[in-house]
Length: 158
Image 1 (tube, one colour):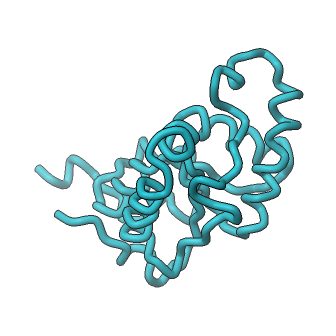
Image 2: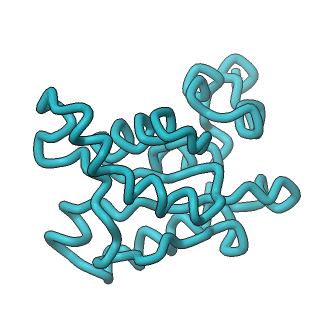
């Protein structure tokens, strides 16, 4: 089974991607960021990917990493994250793919705090959806537009 973007051809749901600090800006740089984009475009469709500006090694930190998410300094973290929220909202994409849990949690909170109304998903979620193996119980945090796409029912595989 190969990942496919066929599920999104008619829907045309747009996605953007957060470049995780540790793997992109602090480690492997633009080559790994390009790999992440290649993989995401393969599962959502190249025409449905909207890159943030700036991006890759120059992308903005979300403000949740390095222990900041657990620091107890919520107002400072949300204030710092405003630039990320503005950047995400400028894409117009209703979904942000996050490569790490800290980014996921911070960006989700930014969306709620600043009223961005975008959803944050892990890459593995959209990959599993593209393969048709994302179970109904793994869709609770998705928007209504993705909750029923290629729902895999394990009992039907028996």
